[in-house]
Image 1 (cartoon, rainbow, N blue to C red):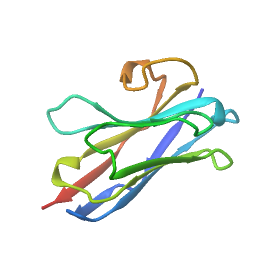
Image 2 (spheres, helix red, strand yellow):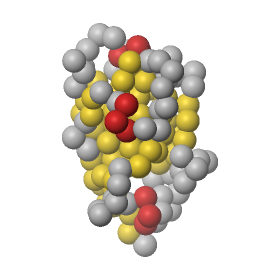
Image 3 (cartoon, helix red, strand yellow):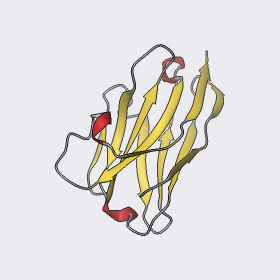
Length: 125
């Protein structure tokens, strides 16, 4: 069982930055693929990015590529989402998710086993 707790959301203006954190419980964090997803009001949850257990493989949605950076610190059981040059369309609830490392489609939300409670990010224009 893995428990995930996100933090770091808030209200910012367009062009500013935020860093989200996702702290995980358990002693096998390095064996989990970590994903970030977001859900805007009235919209489906969408893939933002993912990072493999070792951190050697990182993927981003086209909409955030070049602006967002995912990293992880396995010693701290934490994954991060650094968000720069934020836009109003980035406004959403951001969720982190975990699943055991493996050859899955990292962009598909239902393939993740564990989810955090979400953190709100609001970007004003």
